[in-house]
Length: 343
Image 1 (cartoon, helix red, strand yellow):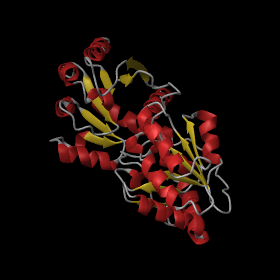
Image 2 (spheres, helix red, strand yellow; image 1 turned 90 degrees about the horizontal axis):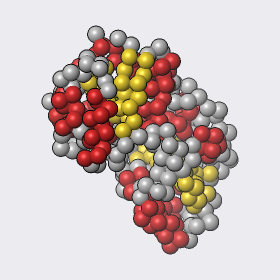
Image 3 (tube, helix red, strand yellow; image 1 turned 90 degrees about the vertical axis):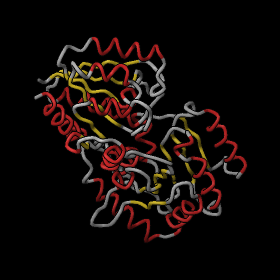
Image 4 (cartoon, rainbow, N blue to C red; image 1 turned 120 degrees about the vertical axis):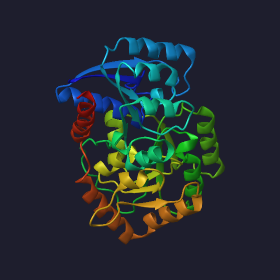
């Protein structure tokens, strides 16, 4: 069997709604096609995982289009919220669930129990699922995200071009970042926040107000969502990625930055340490405590004032860049899991 039906949230290719999950879904589908698989995509409308009756009806229609004994891969944002539709369908289909983020919502246990295999994007997420649900360890697999090759950045001598890439939402922690930046405003730097301002507009407004309150409006730039060449240019013209997230399953933005040999300061949550990785030259970044602007400010001050630290982290980032997995590798690993379920 070399055909797979993939259920994804509608809009995964919408440039106004970039996300790590959307990128992962698209790149995996493309990689499977390149490997010779027949991939049938079924985009399903809805505010997943907050499924309403119309969204569940759309999912039911998509499942009906999959032939009996068909191989079915469902994005976890949909799957975890759809036990009433997926659990019965799993009796006639070969169900796999792709868990970008364990949601711990009602019905997730039933869906995962009905799946023949579960795919996670980090070892951290796999451990979370095995600790939370009575799943067979051999049925839960890690398929790490790949990275797109990129040119290495040269960086500036002072390291003051800071970059944060994430939708401006509470769980991404830009409020903590603004507080930390206020504590280092005696130093030269400029910070760009690249990410949608539409996901949580009230939070985005509060970030702008916080910037004004601290007198940082000339130094903090809210750029909105960027993709493709515009995003690549943002990385290429930066010195440091700052990622103050309150939770990450993996943190694809970190490996995107490392593909440019860009060092990272990030909260050590979830799968972030995995994404950051280790090298013979050391870790290519600094990990800080979540929701701790003092710790983040200390790391930023060290980066901005210590030439030796900048040199060490840049060297480690250049080494890590050489070991990042490709999307082809991700596709091969996903194909192996699919093929095992198809047998």
